Length: 266
Length: 231
Image 1 (cartoon, rainbow over the protein chains, first blue to last red):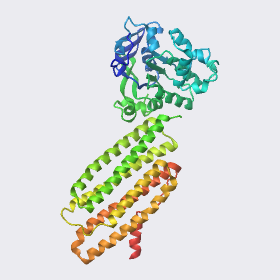
Image 2 (image 1 turned 180 degrees about the horizontal axis):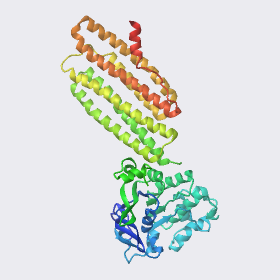
Image 3 (image 1 turned 180 degrees about the vertical axis):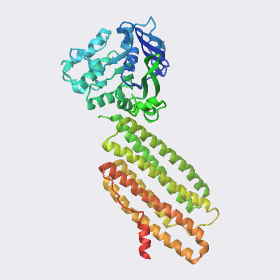
Image 4 (image 1 turned 90 degrees about the vertical axis):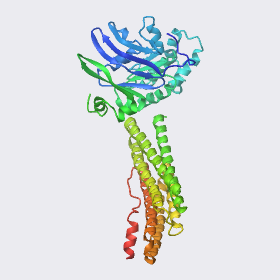
């Protein structure tokens, strides 16, 4: 895949889905999703449990393929190109579209190595100390760990571990960061820190976040995709409404969205 | 700092309120100046200014709704956003008083002023000045200033009483002046109400800062109480 260059005119959308369906074997988990993901914005995916939010998120960096029998129909375009084209290397995709998970999962290595390791494998040839510092600074963690870089990443608090995982994702210079419930295991203050960090990160990256916490989507995102299970022969998840977050939370068009955001449905 | 984004959005709203306040202040000064000069064109311009004021108010109202919906404000933040909703509504109505004065100017047509305007521009100046300082107190959440400004409303009420008596004298001496005197009485009444609303803004500021909802001064009744006592 061609790297997007700042000199060429990049599309407004980093990712776009076209009639996207996602199957686990015969089971169609997600149906007919058409959403754009805007560059340097935060797109939130919300909806009740089991509606396919995480499945959709994982399709964005081909993480679903790690479970056998998973396939998609329709298309996901990443920087204008078909993400699932046979010529595309899924490992390369996962470098350019990084992921942060619900439970902080630092490597059982030093803070320093948590960041350096992926970069080294990816063939990073520059000054490693500078990269480590830059990633930790971007993840708003540097000041808290600069004196203990050789300590284990597992010794940090939950919120710090999650920011370390974000720093680690940044080390391979991705364009997009996918976040799957990044704050659901954290206390409210650590949660707000992650949300504030997202506002900083979106200046340089594009973020897609799945969250159970509607208030978090409301506080932190620019666009919101509302997902829900629909009866289409079989039960399957789809995006029933996509709009600016402000609109979703003040004047949604779909009655089901209104019901969900006001806590009356779902 | 936690919630840096929300903080900066709150600051933006406060800046917008200051902007709305200065539009209202300008409209009031312009309306009285136009009346003083009997400048109909300038009076018509106040109507345009009023549309801009209303537009700005809706813009701020929308921003406040989005912040309340998306940021889950609590405690001080909630008082601030809810009270700001109230304050912009006061400001919009104060803009209507300026428009009311412009309207009287237009309705007067070719008729000359009953008398040169002296106390009316004073009232307007005082009201505009009180508004200006009340919004500075709002932005800084300055409780002391917010509690003092409404006391100055007495000066506006005194000027109103003075204008009222003066105009009554004209009417008594020559009933043909009734219509022209009445026009000026409306103008003075608009100005008196304008200043009253400054008190409401100050009360909201005290509420934002302290959580205490108190009536600083019940100015509305003062004038009528005084009239009654004199009889």
